[in-house]
Length: 323
Length: 290
Image: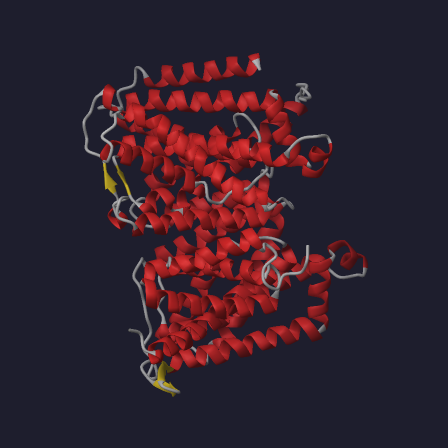
């Protein structure tokens, strides 16, 4: 645990060192979007990687967080810093609700993937149909820059905010690797029946996992509102968010501490590169993105961080056995 | 007040749409039943088939119905090739990897279409597009009637293949017990590729029936694929009869729901059914006990 915490502190220091002196808006935006993609992947990894539940509807939690964050400011007139805990709580509650419904009936694997997808779609249609969410027009949060309003004139402010979220997600992930709860979660992932036989309550453990995962996803949703000031049902509840979260985590390496961040970074670099090279032709950049995605999965079945591990083994670093 | 004629024609319209949904879902359920993967590229593949039908009509003047054997054969080859060359190799037998590969394929296919055709919505003109057939008090568009009969005919052929041919027996054997089938000398990888090919061929047929009364653009598949998922879950994953009945049912729910609640909330009915079935009867209406 101590080694993980040192690594996390090093990572945060490195991000600070890379962004604090920088003036380039392009560079700062790049770092911000990479961290944001990393946060999505980390959130998904808690349930998908450590809990073994492949969700296809994490956009649901993202959207609940985003809509709470926007409505708390617009309808209730609250300060964004005060709304943020509410957004996280709403996201975690949504996670508990969905988890309660699906896990209680023993849905696993493909069924779980499909039902989560459907839940997110239901919320997308609902948010577009009822009045208080602004319907299909979406919601616009007025721009008032300032620290007290969680809106920053420079990308740097957002990066520090995100860094705090990402760092917290890393600490929670490290805690999952070393704590009793994390061990239970991985036990349920690896063999639910065996875990039950030794006295673990799989339902409770999985509910804990989905609530944690949903909480971080809703943080990302709230962050989205603060940066872009505009949301609509298609943006925040659409399948693209769910896909971005799961692709980053799987490409990076499921159930690893650094994999999701690494995967999100690699994919973000890839997307930026192809967009810059082929930007004027719509579609080409996404074609290359898709091809590279398939190739990565084809040749790195354990994700990018799996490569590091097998290289490490080849060069004689001992892999510690974790309990 | 709604009079019964409107309701009746709404149900009939729903049945005609539902038959095409069923055809799409049959392909999905076959692939799921045999390979145990959710094919997220299913919608993109339908889009490819629709463009094929469009090009054949637009460039070569081949009528969509006449193009059916061609498109079906082409989609079969595409499916066979994709499974044999890409999905089989890239999956490494891990669920999450197979999921990502089909997702990656969907991204590639959709964006290739975007590069090629831009995002314009295209339709074809046929002499019979506006003809109608009177069924009782209701008037139904001729292409929809043809789609209904054609989809049921293709489904019947598929049932026959699965039930009565050696290929069908091999497919059922692999779906049921992969290792056992392998020990009996069945080439499992080949059955996988054949099943994927047949699943995609269903999409080819669906595209031929769909396009005369529908349109195509690069995103057209995503709407269908969610509905197809719903049908497959409703009917029981891997069940053919379930996919057929589920497809017709969903078609009617969508059509009648749209009549009462408007189009966007009418869709809610589909998802409400979807979630209710998953929660209370996850093996589906016709799924095997498990």
